[in-house]
Length: 193
Image (cartoon, rainbow, N blue to C red):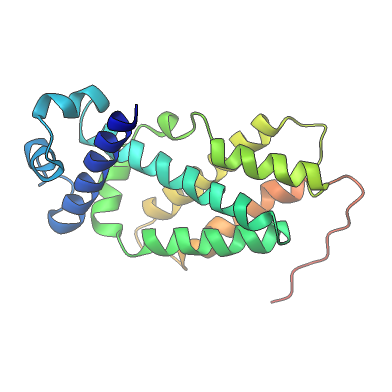
């Protein structure tokens, strides 16, 4: 299992490096396998193609950002932990639009929404602390967070002008879910500009 995780991570890393260097379309699978130092057949044990590799990388990144939110929220208020980590996540995407837009258009979005472990850990922690309502399952709230984050990134990438920074777009979308998931007794004060 450890060897499989290493091979998958090496392929993911090599693919993303090559997409950044030469673009999504120009990158060939054989180049990814050479850089990752694995056989061509090994690539297809993990991914159906470059779009599958990209979908896997994106799902990994999203899961990682929510896991970091959960780690930070363990010792800090929920919203600042989420904001800080989503700002870092968004900055990574704002640096890559040329190849990212092309890869996104070929991405299987459904694959991004499977098994949101990081998002579920964040929701469970917030529910235990009483920050989020408990009458909705952690799995459902985690799924909603994943859907809204993926949707916000996709919407931003689909806009030719990329109006405003991605992090603002993402934060507004995630805030909508978190506001709806508040404890019923919590009063929300308008955010100051």
